[in-house]
Length: 442
Image (cartoon, rainbow, N blue to C red):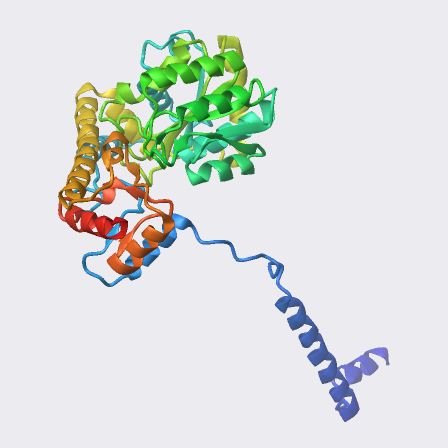
């Protein structure tokens, strides 16, 4: 009896729902859909403001959009050959072939990177005979180029520098310095560096500021080829800076992005770093191989700290690892292997040093050519600062209004502070560049 009832129930026809029920159900689903859509349209990021464009990238974009055939881009901070093209160093090509032929694995590097690379990089910056190396007082890690080195340094100093949370950078300095250190938790302040009136180093202002800031302050120093001014202290001026730093107990943090690339001599460009160590300073150093090896996209660099004793150095290294681990865990290996191949082979290293000199010499010659062209045009201004400055960048002394006119009337692109990348100057465009600058400075 029960089974029969179940069978009848299972096959009983379903009664059609009433029209009222169906309308109610449809309305419910429509309301649910509207409510869901409203939630989706309320973005989590609706209050995020539009950020300002990057100043350098903005110049490049404007340059690309310019249809004038003889346009000139002096904003890019990367080496270009005399045809205005990127140059991959032959020594880098050869090193890459050697690395690839070894058929190495792609396993993770350690937290502090490829050991062969960091050892050779430290010897390049400090010299193999540096007491910081021979006495085991150097803690070093591979970094994501110079930018990554600075960020590691900022994070380490924010956690462990015992005297202050303020770091003093030159005025002006590379624009990313302030952002990097601020994001690391430090407060960024400035010391005088550049004399805009005389287009030269403001040594008196620099020394006075280092003397007046609190004792044991952190001070960022450009080791060579100051970015953006191209104005470097002489060895005698470095000695005066070191005297004030020592008397005040300041901590020097060197940014060395252009070793060898500035003068063509890697030892000469490392003078300040080595001098401070010889004078007994504990220092921090951010080192980059972007410019001097042309390894821009490979992001190859190091961050290091020289300590008083090997025991302190071991503790510092342990804390550097703790900083690195949650940032990116460990660095990429290919670029570091290429750099190590170059630095570790006597013939390849010699070839590389010649190529670095070739790049430096071309930039030096473009400075001289630009200056001579301006003088030949009859300019009454003093352009000696073009050749007295050093490295990739030159502070021309042009005003923002003159820069704007160069861009709008002559299709010459540079930053509004008058900084030009000398790597963008070639034998083919230098005359037109000089004519354009002369036109806006008469």
